[in-house]
Amino acid sequence: MGTVGHNRPRCYRAGDLTPVWVPDAAHEALRDLVRAREAAKADQLRARHRLSKFLLHQGRRAAEGVQEWTGKYWDWVKSAVHFEQSAQTVSFIDYVHEVEHAAARIQRLEQAIDAAVETVPPKMRAVIEALQALRGVAQVSAVTLVAELGQISRFERARQLMGYSGAVSREHSSGTRIRRGAISKAGNAHLRRVVIEAAWSYRHRPSLGKALAARQRRQSEAVKEIAWKAQHRLCHRYRRLMAAGKTKQQVVTAIGRELLGFIWAIGVHIERPPQPRVARRVLEA
Image (tube, rainbow, N blue to C red):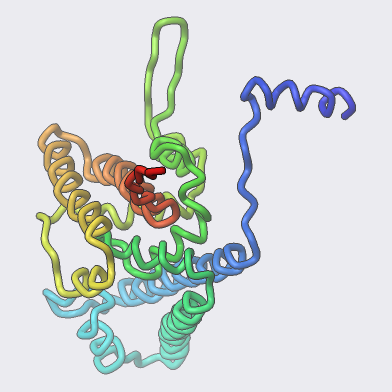
């Protein structure tokens, strides 16, 4: 331990030490809350799978054209599905109860997230609101990004943020030979999940829907310009990669990685706003 401590100033002078960001109480509390919601979403998915597999095993299928877990599908489950055996009825009711319980749990946690956003420091709330100018990033996603990243401007470049997410390619180097493979996943999995989910929305042509317009209403022209540029660039890149024969998952992962660059740009703009130029005054004696 003494040797390590003795070498620490030398490593710092050489630039070999990487600074570590320690979350404050507000960031840590918010992170705990969004991760609780994420766990609830995973439980909901498992509960839905159990119910759908049970119905499939019993040969019960909704009418053609009714998609799973829509309002029509849920009406069919509650009104048209019946069993003659009481044991199967008990199992069915229990599966339905678990799905409903998971949905109520998620709703409570999302209401708690809405309330928590109102109590966070003003600068953090400003970043959360600004990130919602991006397509595919509503409030829960924006809160998750800020909770997982903390101060976005601590990353000197967008590529550092991409590396932090683990959405960059693996690299195998030997001499002059460099081979790159799939993404490393050596990063924040919660962050990577959110940006890849948001990336799916960029397969559609650029547009400004009602919900997105409402989220952008209070944002500056600079933030809206970054968000609009993201729509054009990422949609074009999505189509170009699909035309090149890449799989959808590969393309969306690439889009998510590039989306992090626009997230970084908005975060830096809010946390470190450009200083206005002060005109020089000529003072006459």
